[in-house]
Image 1: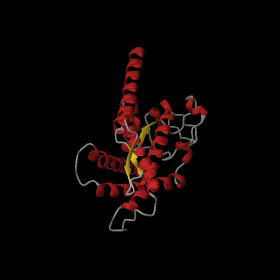
Image 2: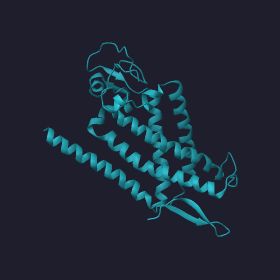
Image 3: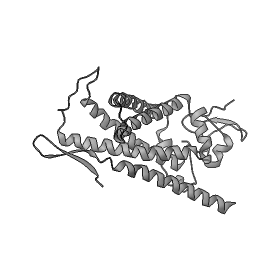
Image 4: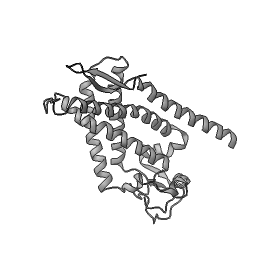
Length: 50
Length: 209
């Protein structure tokens, strides 16, 4: 997985073009993990409290 | 009939009231700001990421216009927070709050989310303001040569990272605003009020901010 998007200028030198859009899946995944973790924790705590 | 206490914090001398009485938590202007910002951020996210995911449409104009709206909303929010609200009520995090012993208007989780959103929004708006220099608009002509290519690279990276953070933060924010425990806060952001009983469940009313 790439972290950055790289390109080349008119002289062929590498230039930074931004973050890699591969990381979009990571950003989405982190949110899903946090949400699932909280939902499971709440479910578990609810069952213990019942 | 809502009991108007304060829009920016809970005063030390809250008048006696029944548990079901309503307390104004967010003033109308703050609720309008919140929902306008939400609509603008969602517009920016869709116009940024849908083309990357393969949905082709003319996104550039919508994106820079929405970006200008977000910059204006952010400036408004900073000015309102500095001169009309207690900044401390939202930004300051005391050790007693972390332990749950002294919770003011906002909980630790709400303050952490606000900090996360603050860094994200400042990241996209400051870099976005620079990137407007590359746009031809009815108001100015593009000038991409003021900054070096290396500097533009750094600006693009910060803009992109902040945008990726927006995906994570917005998803988490929406989830936590929809869970049953947050229902009073969601209602407060829509209608403005919270009941005294709901407030006392998680907050101490004798804290100024």
